[in-house]
Amino acid sequence: MTISIPPTHQLSKIEWPVSKPDPHTSFAVIGRRELTANEFARLARGVSVSPTYGRAGIFVHGYNYSHQEALFRLAQMAADSKVKERAILFDWPSQAEVTGYVADKDSAAFARDDFAQVLSNLSAAGVRPTIMAHSMGAWLAVESIRQLSLMGKTEVIHAIDQLVLAAPDIDIDLLRKQLSVTDRLTKPIVVLASKDDIALALSKRLAGSAATAGSLDIDDPRTRELAIAENLDIVDISKIPSLNGTNHDRFASLAAVYPQLRQGFSNPVAGTGAVVLNGVGGAISAPFRLGGAILAH
Image (cartoon, rainbow, N blue to C red; front, side):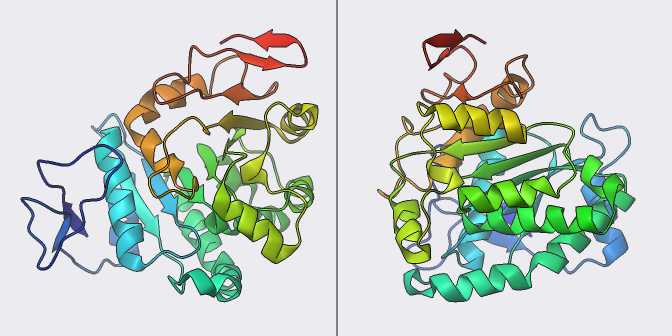
């Protein structure tokens, strides 16, 4: 898919067409072609002379996402981050309805084998993907990686450069159970959390869950224990403005500072506890206070 971004584009926004899409004022699909499996692998890998050869980003959307919204959100993040890696959308069949939570959960479960196969194909093609999985898509991603571990496909898991779980709609106890039988990735799993996430608060009520990974409180000592035990970098993004009032979509604003964040996640603090994001651009220099101790970057 070739997506046109309007010259008036504002960071983190999707400029939706009012009627007929106009590339001058709105996001627009201006090209589309089918790919064979070999063409997909070749395009995902890139050309050998490129500094991003063998690197790609995969977006796994969450609950209540239409195909068009998922496609445009990926385009927005790719444009704002200005990274040159290939951008891949894993689009599982969401109902795209607020009332479709249970149906979406079934659809996410249905798509696990497919995502595991995509990761296997990319690994075989020499691609090291960064996965950004949002909300219910985070559950799908972790389940697929767990499945690959149980299948003994260690080489596929080690090919993953980084896994970012944005506002993950995963029960904490379930996440521990999933990770207990999952091979560790080469880098800590990054969890973008907001304790005031309204959508996850609703999800907890629907599922009868005590806590979700996407609404962790970084001031809670148990959060630090979880980060150490499960090799997580837990990032508080609650100071970032919400795009739609639910506080569930803040991750989209991080694309503009993604290159800096990527460097920050590999600093000495990573893997030893939790880190804090105070706002866009403040991810690297902000200290983290926990139990009277300050972890400085």
